[in-house]
Structures are given as structure tokens and as C-alpha cells.
Length: 367
Image (cartoon, rainbow, N blue to C red):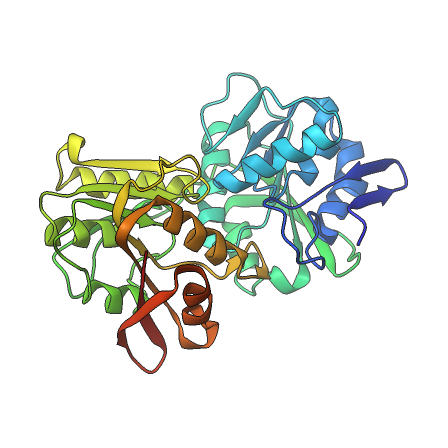
């Protein structure tokens, strides 16, 4: 499969990050193409790009030196990789989250996030910090546009105009209007069945309730460990439970979502002294020292952006094995149909079933 994007006025080489052997996965989609074809020629002045998954938009608009914002650590690596691949300069501002901007912004591009509460957070910030009437262009494939999107955009933007459909993708163009969120977008809630109160920033997995897998995992947190890693920590619920079950342990929590690590850091700081935990924004356990942990807890995702894939889980498992000391355990929860026991047995050799219900299974892979 070619990794070259060819449009009438633009040719780019683009690769997904991290690269895998799944040749059907490419680093751009029809919504990216539509922005490049229709919105890019209209940009005059400062451009703000938000949620560009693999850096395709950052590369296309590189000559404009856009402000580039993405919650995902992996997306930042993808942008750098693809800029280097095309001999383009890194934008002067690559941010993990929206920050006050000194100069005026003339146009905003947003690749529609999966999480509409995060979209609300973005639009609320734009209304609070940009001049009224600033153009905001939201891009997505039609299948990614939920029926509730219309109401969300109308709450925060005026003069919304849909583009013509091209390759089953569409742009929604509107203007900032100064309207703000009516309720807090950073949530604070009680985790059901626990005494943990959780702060959740908008793009953190979990919303206002624990998922079924987390509930099951909380019932099976091992004790007797000193060096614990919560891999893919999200809001840190497993870190909190691990700290309680292992009061003398040091907790390292890692996530590739900036909102995830921001939430986790705030939640751990409520119950642990600063010296007893560390929260990292990173791609799995990249750069972690070998044999530096006794226990890794993991509830791995099975998608990257819109693509269903197991390569993230594989990377988590490989990184965990490298990071665990001899005799250390990787405790994983996953849907039964994902077959994690096969992957883990191939990688670790020894795998034990800890618990299971009709949908999920918890496994220990022992190094």
C-alpha cells in the first residue's frame, strides 16, 4: 500500500505512528483531504489545528506555522515523524492542551474527537479565548458524526454551514459567538462501589462512571508489591486501589492522554504524598528502565482513533515484560473474545487466570 497522499496541489508521504504490519491502516482519511482541499486555501493569518491524529494536517499546513494541539502523546510523535519524512519544520507551538494565545487566531480546524464532551471543552475554550466571529471548521467522516453533534455545535457556534459531502466526509464551518458551557466540563464524581472521588478532565476515558472492566479489576488488586505501574492509567482508579492495597508501594501511572494524566495526577495527590507516586505522559513504557517494577496493572484499549487494532495491547505487553523484574506480574483485563491469553502465553510463557465473568477475564502473565 502506498504511503503517499496525492492531491492536485499537494503531495505528502505520511505514515501512522507507531508503524505496524497492518497495511490497511493509513495516516490520513477523507476528512483530512477535505480540509486540505477546501479549508487550506482559505486560511489567511494564524491557524490553530486541534486533534490532528497522525500529523497529516500539520504537514499540509506546515508553511503557515500553525499552532498545533493534541491530547495524545502518540499523535505528537506521529506529527514529528511525518514532518521529518517530508523535510518540513516542526510548528513553533505543539501543545498538549489549549493554552492562552498571545496573538489573534484567524481560523481553527478540529478533527472531530470520539468524545463529544471533549469537543464541548474545545468549543467552550475557543469562545472564551478567541474573538467572536473566528471561523471554526470541524471535519469528520459521516459515520463518525453522531446525531447529537448538531445540538452540541449549535450551542457553541453561530452561522454553521455544512460542506458538500466528498468521499463520505463533511466539514461543518461556524463562527465563535462567546457562548460558554452551562455546567462544569471537568467533572468530579464518586466512583460507584468505592469511596474514591475522581476528577475527570473531558478527554479522559470513563466519563462519570466506572466501566464494567474497571469494577471487576478493582476486586482483584494484588497485595505485597513495592513497585507498581498502572499502564494506561486514565483517571487513576486502579492506581488509587493499588496504593490502598499496597500502602508502602511507589506508584507509576502512565497514559498517552494529557487529560488522562492530568486527572490521574490530581486524584493521586489527594491520597498520596508526592514522593510516593509519579504520573507520566508517554507512549506505553517507552524509556522505562528494565526490571524496574514488580507489578503492572493494565486495561488495554483495542482501538487507535477509529481503527480496531491489537497493536497497542501488544506494545503494552512487550513493554511490561521488559519493565518487570523476574517473577513480576502483568495483571491484564480484557474481553474474552480478544484472546489475550494466547498473546500473553506466547510472550511470557506462564499465564494464570485470576477471575472471569461472562464478558471479561483477568489474567496474570508472570515473567
